[in-house]
Image (cartoon, helix red, strand yellow):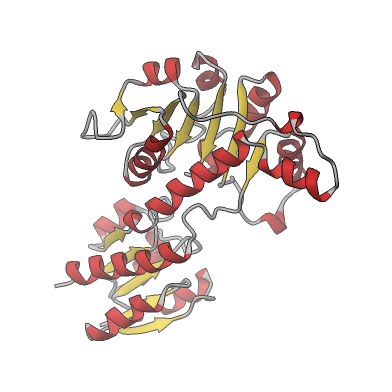
Length: 309
């Protein structure tokens, strides 16, 4: 059996495949067209985010049995077409859920304590303590939208800050866990001081945060988005930042993450976020730690090996 690995992965995945008698072709710099030209020779395909799987791709993948996704997001795979083709799709959200949760909290603490601005002040020899007076998490209500692996990890980690944590998940099978309480969306929007998105991207979650969502929030609030860029409507976000309905935002994900190809309009959004003084941006690295790289490889390889006949 042969596996094609199309993205950088910790060597432990290759080692586990080798021990199981699977021959791996490791080509982390391969592009979409090159994968499509080779895929007919492989039973296993391991991807991260650059390769998309659609019906035409699957028609070429005549031997393919398993697609393994390093991470959680499956919007790059046509799941119905894969099922029809008899191809099993496996992801590994357990591998980086803790990294995402830590990153979300880190961004929020940096925002609350004006750390980016304070750093700039010091290196510019400007000492203005009052302008950088911080905000505390303690006593606030955190609203988590989407309570899967990363949502639950965030609830657990943020519980130590003496917050109330609520979650809303249309598809959750639980109403309460040790760290959060499930509520309807109306209650979450009534009580939350902080909204953190942990949903997959699909038609249902496209521009989940829009003008209507913002208008239904009872309090002025802070936003965290570590899910997918298009979950948040940029125009609605900028409007709400301008009115202070959104008091600040932490964004790790964007509509277009090929930043070198940004149009003038896309650059204008980034400039507007920067000028607002209350937005922290990062390069889709919430789940991108040294430890998560190992766990993603371990978990995904084990899931694939368990699933194979």
